[in-house]
Amino acid sequence: MMVTRRDSSGSWETWRVGRRRLAFRPYLTGLADAPDSSDLSMVIVLAQIVPFAVVWLVALVCTVGVWPWRALSGHWLVVAYPTASPGAAHRRWVGSAAEAKRLVVEWADAISSGQLGPHPAP
Image (tube, rainbow, N blue to C red):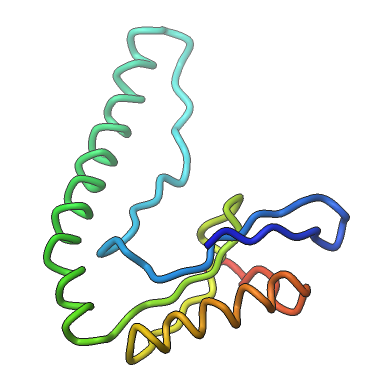
């Protein structure tokens, strides 16, 4: 579920609230600076992007096993984070899909009313 609200500075902020569907979520923290040489720059960028893409593929493959396990066991990870900074997420494990849906609605209401702000990034 996407929730839109105004933050303390008055600008619009969009949040994603829902069950975590991927097995894990890889993050790319930033690209390293490269020298001015365009050939060397391309090599450095590819050396960072290719492993990141491989990790994303691994996350998608792992999800094939994790999604049914979560559905059968009933253990779901519920997350809420601003889309501008997905690392600053609220996370909570719950024991059933119904409880996960209830928590999603609760967090969405709290975000809309300004009671739930971004969690400090680790």
